[in-house]
Amino acid sequence: MTYHHLMLFLHVVGVVVWVGGMAFAYLCLRPAASALPPAQRLPLWAAVFARFFPLVWISVALIGVSGLGMLLEVGFAGAPRAWHVMMVTGAVMIVVFVSLWVDPWRTLRGAVAREDWAAGAVALNRIRQRVGFNLVLGMVTIAIATLGLGL
Image (cartoon, rainbow, N blue to C red; front, side, top):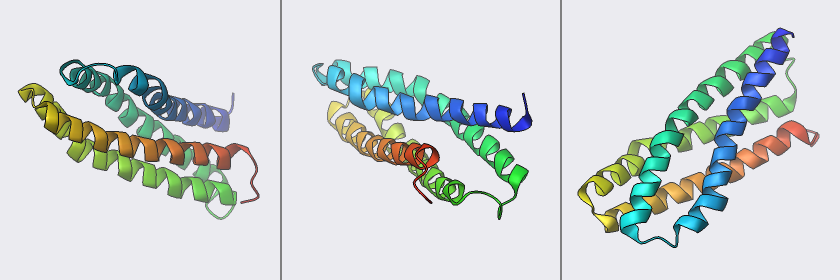
């Protein structure tokens, strides 16, 4: 095992947890949970996010540290163009996640604690929109990393 292999492994693990978790939440859990009344659906989502979001923070750290490690290994100028694009898309994803963490996630937790289902639904919808955006951007980033798009 080389340093590069270790960094690549950590990078892929972070991506799998973050993008895979978003895919599961958006494409599987969301449609299934939509059948529940707000008094059940919103606490469910709050519990799911309470477990998933700490994993996202760990994933962000893994992706950032391993990506930087691989970049330093080859040098900024020696890195493939796709790596530079991935840094930009990854940075956008992190900003979107932080914005989700700062506002709608805190609003959802407070609304669930107060049993304010209307406010909780608004916050959940804002989370859904940002997760949907990040899921698409994450898939685009994976495509850039793997499909040799000539970048």
